[in-house]
Structures are given as C-alpha cells and as structure tokens.
Length: 111
Length: 114
Image (cartoon, rainbow over all chains, first blue to last red; front, side, top):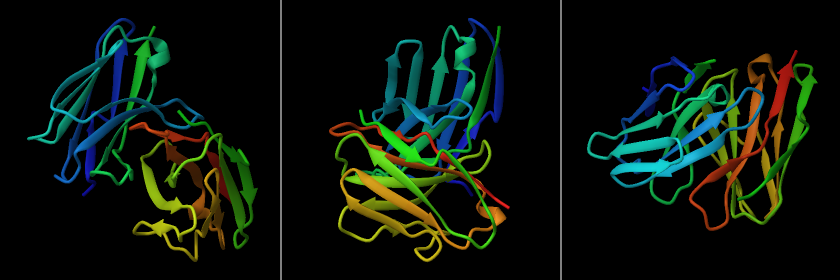
C-alpha cells in the first residue's frame, strides 16, 4: 500500500471556482507535508509546506493539516486556467529530507 | 531557493547501453536526491547523495544499476547502466534550499530506451 494516498485522481473545476485536493498518510512517522505542482514538461515546484495542525494560507492557496488523522488538504480559491496541472502531496519524517510522494491529482480548470 | 540544471534534457538510447545524467546546482547544497517518474505518475525516490560518501539507495534501486556520484557540493551524476525499455521515464534531481524547509527540483531528463 502506498504510504501517501491522494484523492481525487482527477478534478475539473470552472474558472473562478474552488478546487479541493486531499492527501492521507498511512505512516505516523510522517510529520511534515508539502504540496507540489507540476505543469506538463516541467519539474515539480513547491507550493507550500505545512508542519503544524491547522490552516496555512498563502495567497489563493490554503493547506490544512490534521496530524491525528494524518490528513492534509489543499484548497485553491478563484482557480485559474494556469492552475491546471498535476498536484502532488509529499511527506517526510523528521529531518530526513527524503520526500515520499502521493499518486497525484490532475486538476483541470475550465475557462 | 536553489536552481538546478540537468543535462541532457532528453535522450534516446539502445537497450544494453549506459547513459549519464548530470545535475548542477547554482549554490552549494548538502544533499542531492534523484527521483524517477513514469509518465504523469508519482515520483519515486531513488537515492540520496551527499558529498564524500556513497549514495544511499531506496528499495528497488541498486548501485550497480544506477550508480550515483557526488564529487562536490554543487554537482551530481546519475548513470543508468544496461538500460532497458522499462527504464524509460523522467529522472529528476533535487535538493533542499539553503536554510529552507523546501526541496527544489531540476527540469528533468526524459529518457527513452529502445
């Protein structure tokens, strides 16, 4: 079983809408989480990190972490066509810097 | 942040041959990582490379198949030995930003093995 699971596998939202992506870890050693975005033909780029319970907001992006349930989510408000990409949740245990990636969510924002 | 460059961008090789992928950072970094990604799938951590020590490989990846060198704090190479069609994928190098909690990725090397 993959240690970091994402849902949904794909998601379509209208321009200006809210996109919500989910990620769950099955390993309690994972205490640090990141969201990455990968446009076609490019390397993954970090959107934000979240290490503490609760919400973290950066512009249109809000991440939420619940360590008790090992669940992290990403919410994108006012979605833009340029947000269309593959989104990955990544997790790490303390200090290792070795990232374990989820299976990804393909987001399509329709103009 | 740190910028990572990879060479080549893409390569096509015949089964049984070896090829080398280079990764250069624009600043000194402690650890460099190599990941493998099959078409639009998850990224799999292959190995961790620190200067002056042998790379540490994850399950499913071996030193004989994917030797990695890390001669200094800005450079690393990944070699794919005895390439097979199943090795056709994208290979990324990455490293942490100095004093940051974020890992940065290179643009990737797209490998096709015929």
